[in-house]
Every structure is written in structure tokens, then in C-alpha cells.
Length: 288
Length: 277
Image 1: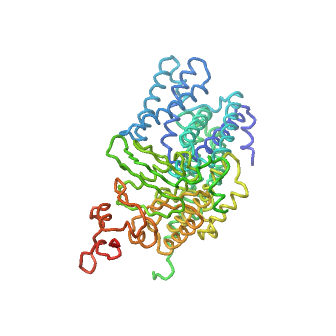
Image 2: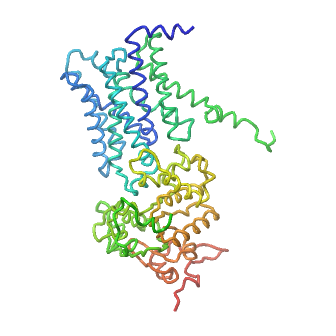
Image 3: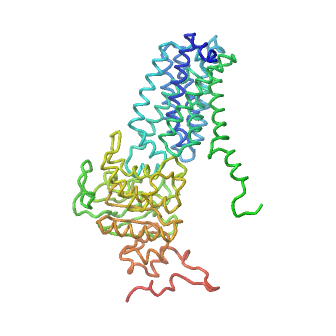
């Protein structure tokens, strides 16, 4: 009965992909909690697109794709902060401009070489089945850094997300905390890019924390649930990719979105369906 | 938790012992070349004062608070908090923002919000210490919210949310409390409870500065009043500064009149508002 679960595990590429996808999804799920709580999903999306030029240059020059992407991510978050400091430009406008420019630059750079479409597809959609042991170490290393930072900073990030005015008034290093989050976000995006590509990595940042948010009233349990949903999406998505013969990144993202809607509709007590049932029941004291 | 221990703490820079809680000297604040939000303001608030900050919307009350907190830099003049630059005095200030400033659906329990008040004490430690948990419990009990400590924020009423914000300030143990319109949309019971709390804080030697809109409440319950309208109109004992001239200069007639039994009445009618001769 469990044969179909075990069968793919015979392949080394599948085992490696499984570890990479779970690590990447878990990583994004942790940092994504703050992306969701601070309402910066759009900035998360912009960052994931904006790493492309850095990755492309590094890829073509034979350098470290990881470092290239990281540099581009940090440059973008600084750029958005700089542009939105101008009086007449709101932050989402700044993000829109920087996102489009950086992404176009990435595509332009990749298109300058011959193997254009194959390379671009790999970058945009990832290829988790081609993960090397070196990639695994990289994702694991980033995971360790993010976990350590989280240990020391999570309380301060929570205050900043809940009540920024209070955080500033209390003398928190608000700017430093924001950019620390941006750097970790860039790190996570670049690490997860291999698994799902730059176009889909946003969904791993948003969908699992959003799913977790539906059923909890605490940041700490939201984080644990978020990791669980992310890991489940990674595993289920990879199996779906194996058996249905569909792209692995797309499969993982589809599962994570599916999980969101299942919980959104059917969660006991909090879900939409439970709400409908509550409303349709006659309230005591009211005649039918 | 004695009032003395709240004034001096390791890690906080030493304050001159006799400096007033707040001192503004000829302070002007202007945002990006616009007309000044606050102009030539000079105010001294001694320690242990209990002050109502009054003025119409846009009169510069928030700017006044921001100047004390060091969140805006004056283009002219000087701000001192306990004799120090505002930025260095932040650990001595408990700022209580308007309740509407945050999203109360945020996934936190009541006790988590109060623990935020200890963050500056916890510093880079991984976990709160026993003394932090003790301060949080005491603060929650003081505002009558201990039974609600495990409740989610969205389960609390507006008045309970306001009490939670005050508990967060109490837990931080700061000698100066700045409250931005704490009485907005709270019921009479909560309002009286807050007033009693403030009175207790002042008795313990803390300085409480509150911005509010309710002139009548300010007149009845606050010993000191500060009227602001872009500049300092008047500051002093409530009974002395609540004069028709001051009210008129502060509000320019706008909120002073209302309809009652088909008659137009004015705050200026009240005999109690007239200056003692």
C-alpha cells in the first residue's frame, strides 16, 4: 500500500530534491511569517524577481549564483527604501518601478547568450531535480543563519510588525531591524530559488504563513504551523511532480495554494464554511 | 518595584537628579519646508506632574510628543528629557500610541503585548527573566487584565485594549508616561479606571502627560493643563489656565459651541471657566 510512497525514494535525485524542497519551503515559511504580518507580500514578490539580474550575471560569468542573487536582493531592498523616501512616491510605487527594471535587466542579460530559453526557464522555474550536494549545503547553511537570527530577533520583529510607532519611540534600531529582515529574506529567496525558481518563490513566502494565520492567535504557533504547511507542500508537490510528470516547482506551489484554500474554506470554527453554517442556524429567541 | 528603582537602572545613562521631566526651550518643528507644526514652544514639565495636553486636531499635539521622543528634530530650540537629549532618554519614556494605530487582529495574546514593555530590559537575552515576568504580571493586575492574559487581541473590547497598552507602559517601569488620546472610544467605567491609574502613577512619583479632546474631563480631573495651537497658548494649574481667552485662542471658537434644548450654548458660558479675580 505504501509502495507508491517508497518507490521514488529509490532514486538519489528524488531523495536530494526532497531534502532541498523541504528545507527551502521551511526556510521561506519561517521568514514569510514576518512578510505576511507586516503586509509586505508585494515587496517579497519584488525581491524574488529582482534577484534575477544578479543570478544571471553570476551564471554567465561562472561565479556563485548564490552570491550574485544575494547582492541583487540587497541592492533592491536598499533601492526601494531610497526611492520611497521621496515625498511624492509611495512605497508600492517604488517597488513597482524597481521590480520591473530589475526583472527586465535580468531577462535582457540572459537573452544576450545563445542558450537563452533553456537557461531562462531554469532560472525562472527552478529545477529541484537537478540539485547538487553543494546546493544542499548552501540551503542548509542559509537555514542555520536564518534560524539563529530568528532566535535573537523574533521578539523585536514582532514588536516592529505589531506597533512600529511604539518600537521607534522605545528606541529600537528600527532601520537596522528592517534591513536585517530584508537581508534574511534575500538569503531565503536565493536559497529557495533552485527549488521553485524566482517566479514562484514568492508563493512559498506567502501561502504557508497565510494558511497558518487562519487557525492561530499566536505568532509562535503561526511559525510552527507555517513550517509544517510549507514542508507538507514540498513533499506532496514533489510526489505529484513524480507521478503526474509535471514541473516540480509548479507542483509544490500548487499544493501550497491548494492547502490554503482547503483551510480557508473548511477550518473548523474559523473557516468560511463553518461561518456559513453558524449563520444559517436559527439564533435562539428568534422565530423561524 | 519602588518608584526609586524605576528612575535609575543599569544600562541607562545617569540623569541629572534635579532636571525636570520635560523641558522645551523655544522649539520649532517644521516638516519638509511646510509651515511649522510647532513654533517657538517653551514648556517645562516638572517631575511628578499630571498634565492634560489640549488643542484642536492638527494643533501640533502629536508633534509635541514626537519632539519629546526624539522622533523629529527641531529646526530651532532644544528639547531635554530628564536633562538629557531625547534619544538618550527613550528608556525613561513609556509612549502609549492611539489604540487605532495598530491592527488588533494581530496574532498575539494579551500577555505578549505587555511583555513588549520589557523588551528594553530583556535586551539580547533569548528569554525573559523571572523579574520580567513578575513586572508583566504586576502590570496586568494593576489594570485589571490578569484574568484576560491568555486572550487573543481580537477578543478584547476597546477599553480592554487601551488598558493593555497602559499595562505595557507600566511593565517597562519608565518614569515618564506619554499617552496619545487614551480616552477615545472607551466607556465611562474604563475612563474612570484609567484616571485612577494615572493618579496612582503620579503618587508613585511618575510624570504623566496625556493628550485628550474632552475639555470637561481635563478641567475636572487633571491638575495641570497645556494648551497648544501651533504654539504654546497656556500652561499651568488647570484652574488658572482654563480661561475664555485661552480657550478662544486655542480653538478659535470651533468646538466651543453646541446645541442644547434648541439653544446655542458655549463652553465660555460656564462660570467655572472664568478666571478667579
